[in-house]
Amino acid sequence: MEGVATAGQRQLSVPAQSLGRPSPSFRLRTESLNTLRLRRVFDLFDHNGDGEITVKEIALALDRLGLGADTEEIRATVEVYIPPGRAGLAFADFEDLHRALGDDLFGGPPEAAEEGEEEEDMREAFRVFDEDGDGFISAAELQAVLSKLGLPEGRSIARVQEMICSVDRNSDGQVDFGEFKHMMQGITVWGA
Image (spheres, rainbow, N blue to C red):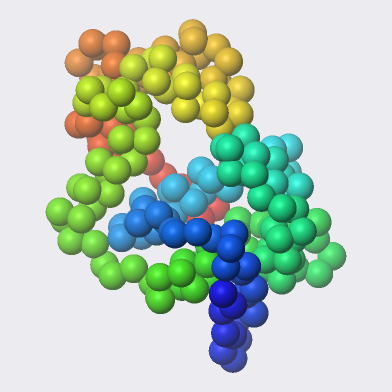
């Protein structure tokens, strides 16, 4: 599948066999949640923390997530978004790439979210962490997700428990959906 560039847009070349069927959660309907999620993905991919993600870092992150991809396919898709003289994508470039991939896969930007859709997007994000589906995020579940993503916080159960305590308003040692929602609504995305 190839995207067709219009005036002012970059050409997007995406091999059809590497895309498979896109997840309905690829792009959330709530712009603030979408930007937050995208910033977190960017920060996860920016392995060395230099504010840019390279093709090598993207390949490493995808491998850690069990989504191994051919480095040359990644390079072919990403290189048109890397400005001349730069080694990788800054966050704004990553947003452009994400938008182009989303437009190519879904046919344009998401519609504005209604209140019920925003709630469903929050629930979907919550379910990523609630691995056993019991309605709570335990320290073990958070640690498992952080470890899968290769984050250093996932190596220390004490650090994970601190993270849980920072949002656990009823002090039951786990995060319920209300606490998760409260935390997500209070997050400011810097540099987005």
